[in-house]
Picture (cartoon, rainbow, N blue to C red):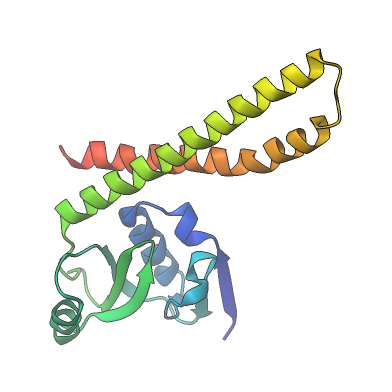
Length: 182
């Protein structure tokens, strides 16, 4: 059996529904997700095996953790861990009847709205930093002082991937929130 790491999956599949679809697709290709741990933000560990039909659920719940966990374990769901503030569960099945989805849809919509607004706010903060740095660079340039140009340019370049990610994440989450309320 070969092990496979899928880097930044939790950051690429930021909408819970997208993460579920991705993991179910991997299971159908024969890659079984190992339990989530501290490194799950950066990569998911998969073990290669036989293809399976697996239903994944990424859920956000307001229930007490002990009650919630025991209720789903009693219903034969396997707890995989927590990723991006979602509890991740899986259940293997056979035939064409998929296990029933138990996720709190209102909770997931609320989660996507909160996360989307958080990412949008972080993007706005970085844009404000860009504007301030640009104003300083222009003022320094007019004064003939070019000693900070390299430092500011490097800082702006290093922040650009984060800015683009925050904008993309906010778009994905808020689009899901808006679409799912229909």
